[in-house]
Length: 130
Image 1 (cartoon, helix red, strand yellow):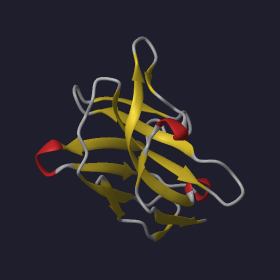
Image 2 (tube, rainbow, N blue to C red):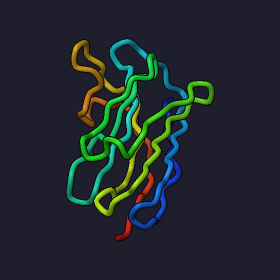
Image 3 (cartoon, rainbow, N blue to C red):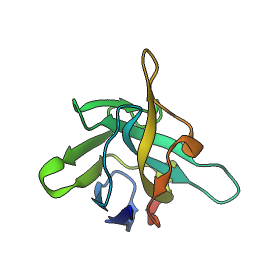
């Protein structure tokens, strides 16, 4: 059974930083489902992919709204995924989810679509005040 457990969400002021963590268990990479990512969701909207990583080679991709501020990383030795969030803005406030098993396609990379990630954590809340 695949399990993902996020932590690190908090309430902070604009400009501050947070580091989200996700511990993954029971998950085995496959060639076509080889991506892990962080998504976020605000009430009334769909889940937005913030960042994704290919554990096999460590390559990353980011949403334009977080480029230069957020960094996704992994520690394969302890099956963990991280999201370092710097210079936080009020618009970054959301529930943040860790996801695994994301679709990987040649020439396209990691999927941006939430339904193409079959495994999800329960989420961790990030609130940024101005």
